[in-house]
Image (cartoon, rainbow, N blue to C red; front, top):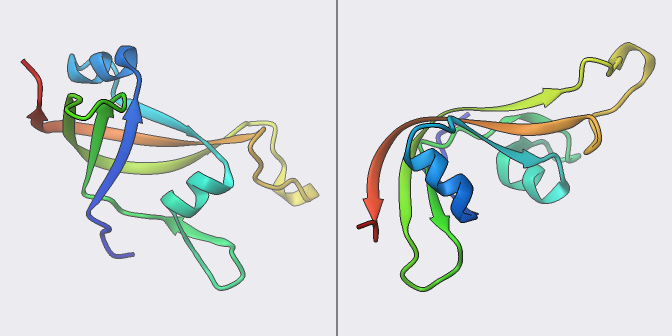
Amino acid sequence: MKNTSQLYLVLNKQWFTEILEGRKTEEYRNFSDFYINRLCELNEEGEILDTKKYDTLKFQMGYAKNAPQIVIEVLDIRIDVDEEVDFENGDLLTQENCNFTIVLGKILEKINID
């Protein structure tokens, strides 16, 4: 799949600070229709083919006009599935048994950070 450039996500102060200080190296998002459309390549029937390949991710702390932002390298986007899921018996990927994991790399840029 082609690279899709930059993903943009808003975080609260706690998670933004942990990423900025290098303590948090993965970001998690719900396996919802909103994030499936945002993070996955889909076929014409709406089935997931793969996750999108973003180069970078811009995190913003909150919604203020001049909010702190960081641009960070995206190493991978995975769909993590609970161990109990048994696809051979017809189990499906659902919000209850899956989540997205965005694996973070180096911080490339800091914006509005003192």
